[in-house]
Amino acid sequence: MQNDYTSKKFRKWLDKLQRESWQLELLVSGFVILGLFSSIDPLIAKVDSIVNSVDRRTGGLVAGAGFVLLSINYILIFNLVVHLVLRGLWIGAIGLRYYSGDIIFEELNYSKKFTKYLSKKIVSFDKYIGKLEDYCSIIFSLSFLIVFIGLSFLIYFAIIFALAVVSASNLDSIVIVMLVGFAVIGFAIVLLIMLVDFLGQGILKKNETIAMLYFPIYWIMSYVSLSFIYRPILYNFLDDSKGKRILFWMIPFYITIATLTTLRYEQSNFHRSQNAASENFASRGMYLEGVEDSRKRYFRDFAIQRKNVSKNSLRVFLTHNASLEDIILKLNDSLSLENDQRGVNTFFSKLFKDDVDYDSNNFKEYLKTLNSITVIKIDSITYSDNFIASFLENGQRGYETFLDLKSLERGRHTFQIISKTINSNDSIVNDTLGTIPFWYYPTK
Image (cartoon, rainbow, N blue to C red; front, side):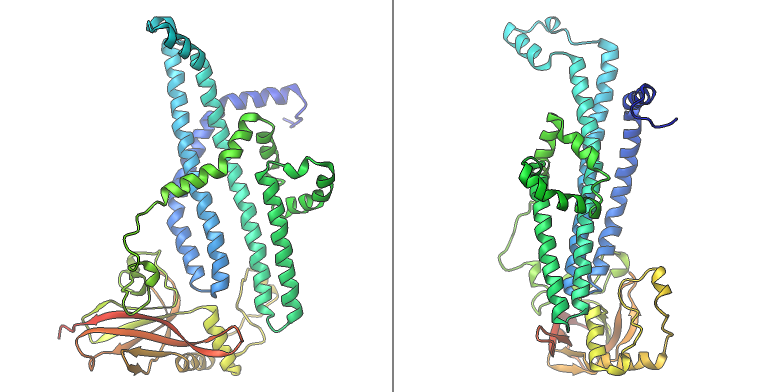
């Protein structure tokens, strides 16, 4: 059938689909909710692994994108669960209508006051079923509208991320850094203007003069953000008073839900997770024990095997990240490659980059430089570490070594790891990655 939207046949077909769409809504909601619940842990693990393998600035952008994805995930779950509940109520109401018909208020034998009030408020059972149908359809449509709005935010994050990568790759060029800085500021202003228009439900499109100035921004960003895909659904909401009210209350409602679901009682001003990686805080996130049983656990800088050590050796894991390799390459020019393989790669990038063959001698030199810039201390004792490359059970990339503890006294000790880092002045300085406690009680 040709999709001529002006023909009566096409409209009749749409009317039929509209009446029977509730069956598809139930199927889609059920499958999507199942998929969304299943994707939460893998999504958190993936974002966590990326954040802990890149520099802190890039990690912040990735974490922001991950937050948007998780927010979309939770909002969709909430919306679709509400949709399923209301649709179930609607089906129940349909079944009850088949059994008992409409409400006859006189049969209830209430007082005149209540009979008048209920007759005015409820009017009829059919009206109640119609309202349920309206809200079910609106919530279902709104759920997938949010998906595409979230996709637009992800595109914005990708643009900012790309600009940050360009800036970080050209720190020596003041001109490029300044151009990127102006681009970021300009892009942020454009996003702010569009946010005002979105929250104001098209307020910038109403005045003729303002609309003329705003139109070029709107036209360009509609393609950049892919908003032209969901624009008809958005405007269908805005031209209806009920849909407009729902859109108006959408953001404060979700903010309220987020506030209520994240309520917690703070038990102490001092004992807080922000004090992790210190000699007085045994944070679970700094010890390797149990990492094989939890795919969500990725480490930021380093970790040791356990907090209570009963053997004569201690496993130490140093996390690999882009900043660490930058320092190694800066200190050892012989390791620099003309064809740098690092960064974002795809299948097509192989067409423009030649693969670098693995060179065992180069890698030995790489590890030698790594060990020369890394210092491990237990209390005041310095250990000559000998890191080798490895992967944790969860797949995280890094380096590990084992320390001999035979000469160590029994009791509590402080583990510290120091490495080189590049400061804001582009000079290399020592940086303490962290200090954590552990207890040594050998069984033999």
